[in-house]
Length: 97
Image (cartoon, helix red, strand yellow):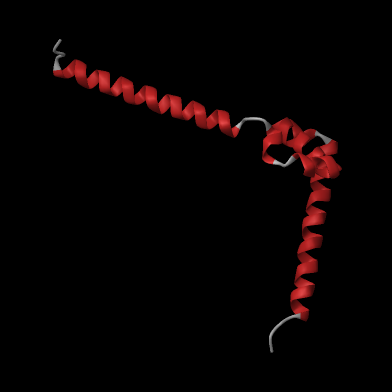
């Protein structure tokens, strides 16, 4: 069975678009998969802040209006910057002459 050149090109375009759509759906599904897969279970078991941050992440844009999430983010920033300032203090004591 011989297809006309126009039909052959149309079939190729439809096949390419279908392939791109399948790849796009797969990427989106993996990005928006289970939130808990991104953090090891042992971390969330022992750190209540990590559990709360995961819950806030799952809320997505609704988390911006959640006071619990605001408190969790504030604590997370505090821990981060506290750790950062501790590293700087340690580095100042170990500078080369």
